[in-house]
View 1 (spheres, rainbow, N blue to C red):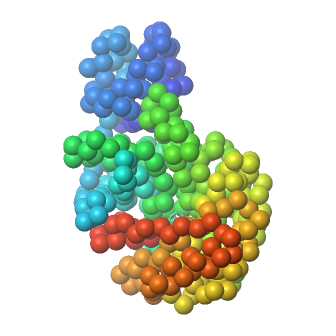
View 2 (cartoon, rainbow, N blue to C red):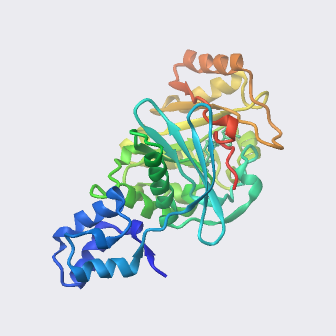
Length: 341
Ligand code: SAH
């Protein structure tokens, strides 16, 4: 079977070219062809020698994941259910902003973290995605924007879809390397955010990702509550996670976003807000409040909008930096925590 063209890195293309006795000068053009122009075939690439274009043509394919289902929200959010080669599927979500799109990608089929508030958890863990399956989501979403006649492009990629990205570290690292190749997709490190439930073994390697943004799903400062919501907190308590964040390089440490899932009557009291501010006060922080998004069978409730606002104000009074994440795509179950294959 052919390898995927859209996992090739600059080094690899240079390697392929020199093993064919070609100059490596065209490597950048080859990457451009693969990631930007979306020719469907290497044969159309006249800058390559016949031998080289045949070689790439025979060994690398362009097939992207197939769209099994597409849902368009009234707010412009587009959710894609994408079919993988082994019959599994994952979801990706295109989120429109003023001048750009953010793409929310999945890192695993299902998830092993078993968080009690998350729809993905109800499907269990199936398998890790390969790097080409992560990049495939981006390439497919770009193709769909093109088909829609959309001028805006994907400017941000967030690893907030299905799966725990740091639990699939090697593929995540490879995918980020490909996303940020200047001659390829050309995203900046700062345009990529990796969200984690606090999977410590992955956080210990975080610097290998070369300076992408980190988001931590915090959700409660109390270990008893947090462990109930996020069971791996039993193994990697919040303190050990925060200590590990302290060990990161300055820039990475200082730009962490702390996600706080707000659940009615569970973690939305004034004391909860005060505690949260106290824990984060010594750190450069941004708190992102995510009001709970319900899904079929969920046992938690979303707080009333007034409570969300009140919680935010309590944090502001304590001097914390805080914003409320606007819910997008909830009419098609595309909002945070509502993804399931
Ligand atoms: N596994 C990663 C990324 C996936 S979820 C992580 O845990 O961070 C992205 C964000 O959505 C996380 O902060 C997660 O806690 C949150 N989330 C999960 N289920 C949710 C729900 N039902 N409503 C609102 N946010 C949810």
